[in-house]
Length: 274
Length: 52
Image (cartoon, rainbow over all chains, first blue to last red; front, side):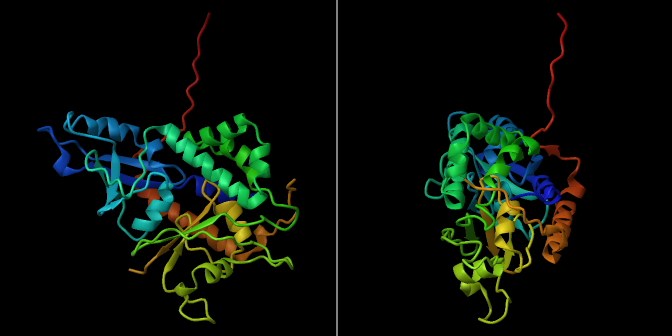
C-alpha cells in the first residue's frame, strides 16, 4: 500500500508556474488585460484552478460573442479532464517556465475537447475514473464498500488541495489484495508528437510466481517500439511520470501506489527527445 | 476483501532514492523562482469566530 509519506507529499506539493494570456484576437476592450500568473497544483484540473482567470478575462471579450472558456498551448487545445501535471509533462516538460497558456472564449474545438459546464462535470469525470481504477485493482470492492461521504471527502480533498483529507480515504484504495498486489494495474500511456489515443491494457503488476514486474516490463509489453532493440533498455523517447523519469527497474506496483494521480491512474507520458 | 501488505521495502531501494532526488529537483525547478506567484488553489482554512 501507499505508505511512503515522504514521496506522496513531494508529489502532492508539485506546482506548475503558469502565465495565462487572453488570445489577442479575442480582446474586445481598448485596454488589454495583463497576463495572469498562477501556481497550479500538478494533481488538480484546470477548471478547479482558473475561476479568477475566467472572471478577469471575461471582462475583456465581446459580451455578445463568447462561449465556454478553453485553453491552448502552441495550437494544442488542453484537455481539462487530464490532470494539470500530465498536460505539462506531455507538452512542456522541456519547455521554458512559466508555462505560457492562451485563454480562449471563441471557436471551441468541438472535435478535440469535451465541454465542461461546471465543477460537477469535473467531479463526475473524476469519480468515474477512480471507480474504473478500482475495478481494475480490486474488482471495485473497495470503492463500492465506501460510503457516499467517503467519496465526497476524496473529491473535496482534491478540490481544496488538502493532502490529509484526500489520503485518509485514498489509502484504502491503495491497499493490496493479500500480499501480491493489485489484480490489474490502472495505467494509461500518453504518446505525444504525433499525439495518438492513450494506451490502456490489462497488466498484472505481480507475476503468478510472485515476481514484481518493473516499469521496463510494462513498457516492453505495451509499447515495445520505444526500445532501441530487444536486449537493452535504451529508449527512443523519454518516459515521464509526475514530472520525473523513473528508473526502469522500479516495480510498477509501487509506482501505482505512490505515483498515480488522484484519479488512481498511473499516467505515463512518452515524450520525444528534443 | 483486500488486506494490508506487510511488505515494506522502499527504504533500501536505489530506485526509490533516485525518484526522491528527482522529485526534489522537479519542485526546485518548477517552484523556487516562482514563489511570488499566487496559488491557484488556496489551502487556507477560514475559521469564523464570533461572540454571542
